[in-house]
Image 1 (cartoon, rainbow, N blue to C red):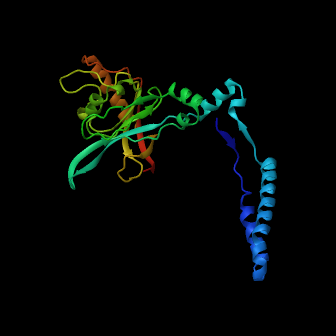
Image 2: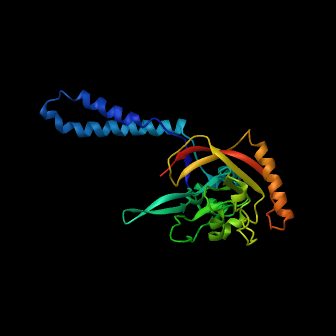
Length: 271
C-alpha cells in the first residue's frame, strides 16, 4: 500500500548548505583541498538530519492499511471521477503517404484507482466495465476503455451513428448518449433505414449537441464537457414530439426519459 505524504519544501536546504560550504573554502590553499570532502560530508549529514526533523514537524504520512475497511472504501469512493464525456470521433488517416479517408477513434485515460493497489483496483472494477476490447474494421483506432455505462456519457461526434452501434454492441448498455444535432430526418439513432433494429437499447438520456463553444484542433484525446444550451427549448420540444411519433409508428425506441440540448466546450487536448 502506498504512503500518502504532504508536499515538502525543505529539501532546498541541502543545495543552499552545499553552496555555502563551498564559498567558505573557495580561497583555500591547495593543501586544504584534501580536507574539503570531509567537511562537505559533515555538513551534508547535518543538513540531512535537519531535514528529517523538519519532515517530522511539518510532514504527515500514514498508511491506508492502518484504517478500517469502511474508511478505506470511503477514500476509494471519493476518488472516483465524476461523470465523464467519452467522445467518439473521426480523424483523417494516411496510408503510404497519401490520404486514405477517415478513421474513428476514442481515447480516454484509465481510472487512477486501477493502479493504486489491489483493493482500489477491485473497487474500481466493480464500477467500471471494459469497452472496445476488439476494434471494428480496419479504420477503427479504439483502445480498450473503462466506462461506467450508467453514468458516463458517450458522445458520438460522427456522421453515421448506426455504424458505431453496429460495430460496438456494448454501446447498448450505455444510458446517456450524446449526438451532433442535425435535421431529424438524417438521424439514425435507434434504427437503420427499413431495418427497425433497435440501437442503444439502454439509452434513457439523449443529449443533442447543437454547437461548439469554441473551435479546437482535431485530435483523438480531446477532453470536452457538455453544457446546457439556454436557447434549446424549441429543439427539445421538437425532438420529444419526433420520438413520440416514432413510437406510435411502431419503431422499437429506447425508453428515453430525458432530452436536453447542449453545447460542446473544449477543455484540453492531451497526447
